[in-house]
Length: 180
Image 1: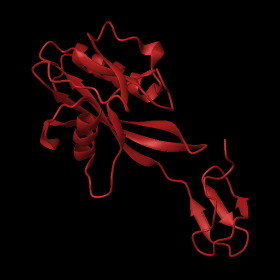
Image 2 (image 1 turned 135 degrees about the vertical axis):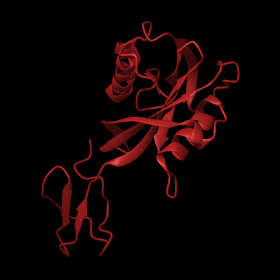
Image 3 (image 1 turned 45 degrees about the vertical axis):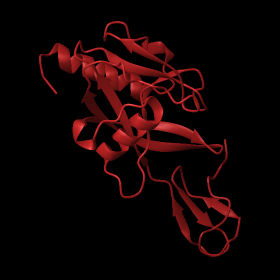
Image 4 (image 1 turned 90 degrees about the vertical axis):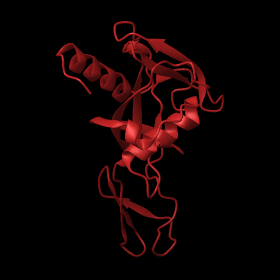
C-alpha cells in the first residue's frame, strides 16, 4: 500500500510529503495540507416481490470473484439515489429511476484504488422490482448475478463487509416487521 495517495502537491508540484496522521499529508516544500476524507458511494439493495435480493459476483479488483451489491462512487452533481440508479443500470441493466431508491443506512468501508486504501462512506438504498427477468450483467463489472432469499445469503463470500452488513441490517429490519 502507498504511504500517501498523492504523487504531487496540488499547490506547488513537489513530491515530498510529511505524514501528519492517517488522513493528513503536508507538502514538505510549501506546507500545503492535503486531507483524506471519505468518498461517498451508493449501494443498491434490490428486492423482488418475494423479498429475494440481487447479489453480484465482482468482475474486477478489489474483490475479484467475490460477492457484492450493485454500487460505486457517487459522481459530481449526483444524489445518492441517482448514483444508485446509475450504478445499478451500468452493472446489471435494471433501469429504475432515482425515485425508486429509498435511503436505508450508511456504513463505513475501505476501497483499495491505485495502491491506496481509501475510506468510503457507503450510502445504502433499497429499491424494489417485480422480478429479476430484466437483469443483464455487464461483463466488465459483474461475473454473475445471484438471486437469494435473505436466509440464503452467503455472508462470508463478500468483498466488502459493508455490503454484507447492509443485507444483515435489512434482514433484521424486515424481521422486525418494518417496511421500506
